[in-house]
Image 1 (cartoon, rainbow, N blue to C red):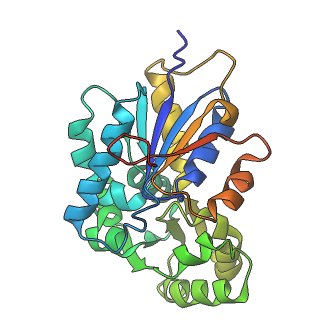
Image 2 (tube, rainbow, N blue to C red):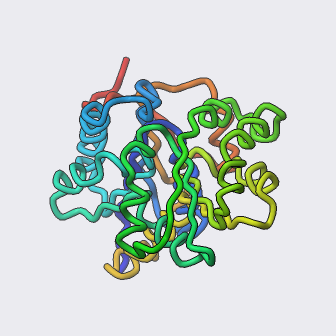
Length: 275
């Protein structure tokens, strides 16, 4: 059976483009409907109540578009509002961005010491520590909020002295603690993979939560026999919605999708097109 319905991708902004890119790489036949709340980004410094409210608005927009699965491609929403989104989902499978990365790290740490970097809201929630504790309570988890990194990624300053200094500020303590596995607990962070790996050297494995979230999507669709095996997928057949079109988006989309770009439209999370 081939299911041509699209995969819904919910994000607080544009960080989830990393997840969308990995889904497209793993499953080039799938269509995506992406909803990024760029008008109210970032979520990471907001209250849990506000994050849940915004997340439910975005999720409801996607649930109304005949999607076959929803991936919450934002660690902040996954950490704070995933259960609320799952309750709203009815019979649509929902995958968050926290558990896949937590599982991957728990399987790969040799010294039983895992580090997590993410937004203040993700770190405050303790979502990664809770997830890893459920997998193996003997693993020590060290979490650090890294609010300077998202603006640097938004400005596409992936290879810059300021970025390297910010990464050093956040991860040197992880090195001192003997962490051997570091989770990039924000889907904005994969473009900084090389800078982070260069900072920690070979002493740490870097876990890309975007990659492992996409792998989870692949596994669930395969298990439920919902993969699209027919032609006609990929970014050219996908639709990306933003609540505001930020200037940097024009540069980010080609970075992840090359010359064939998804269609873009500006909407409100209420569903109507913005004027």
